Amino acid sequence: MKIGSLLVVVWLVIGIFAAAQRDYFKSGADSCAKAGTIAVTIVAGPLNYLGVNPKIKNCNVPHPSK
Image 1 (cartoon, one colour):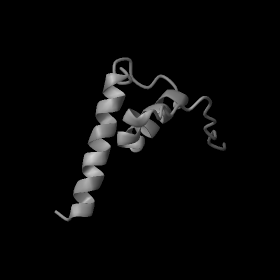
Image 2 (image 1 turned 180 degrees about the horizontal axis):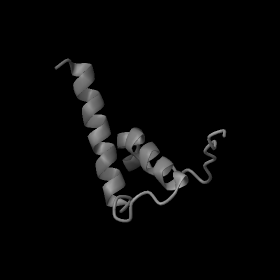
Image 3 (image 1 turned 90 degrees about the vertical axis):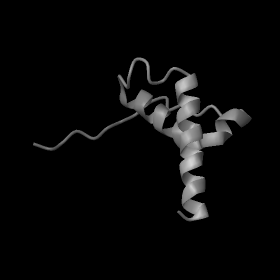
């Protein structure tokens, strides 16, 4: 495994721990905004422990055309 790939995996695992500590996985993603918040928290990784608290307020999902 290359060092870059290992760093990405470690970064995302730290993000998953941060999301778990905030209890984002307990109730599941009831809305698009909550799913977005979970995803952004995971992607932010270690930045969560430096004070970053990413949240998605609204989420507009396009509806399929008929």
